[in-house]
Image (cartoon, rainbow, N blue to C red; front, side, top):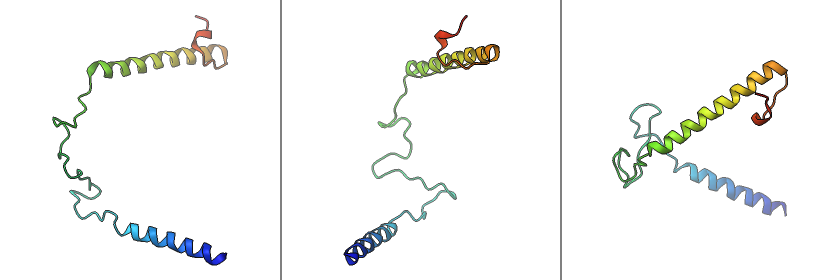
Length: 96
């Protein structure tokens, strides 16, 4: 029984050792640590290609509005905490 476990562990170890031989060796780096390369068939620059996500300004504005709302709620929570000494997460429970 122990021989089977040892053999399985040895096989898994050899598998991982072999896989590391195919790891990226960093021979095509533009600068130290800058070794990014596009996959074959992809353009060097995404901007203007068919892979460009073309972000909608309306969608980006929604995120900004969401962040502003979060900051306003957090401001109310902090002001309430300074007044009462108790943290209230639910903004609707904070007296105006």
